[in-house]
Length: 80
Image (tube, rainbow, N blue to C red; front, side, top):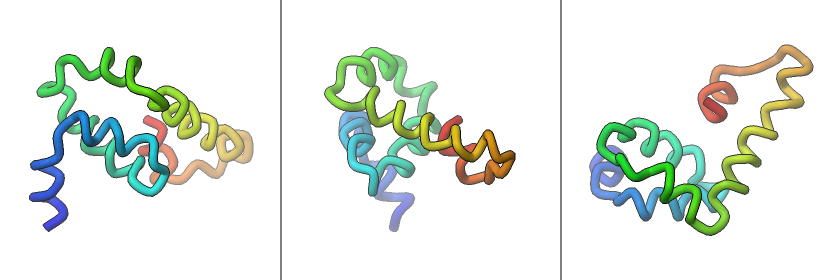
C-alpha cells in the first residue's frame, strides 16, 4: 500500500511534506529516488516556503553525531 501511495504522490506534494518532520524522511527519500524524472526539482525546492530551512535542519541534526563518531546508517541516509 505504501509503495503504491508513493508512486501517486506528486513532486509538489512531496515538497510540501518536507516541511512536516513526521513526513520529511519519507518525502526526501522519494524525491531522491526520482531526481531523473523531476528535472525542475532544485528550483522548486529553493522557491518553496520552508523547504530550505527544513533541509538545513536535517543537515544540522547530524553534526552532533559526527563529532562523536557515532553516525548511524539511518542518519547518514537522511542527510545524504
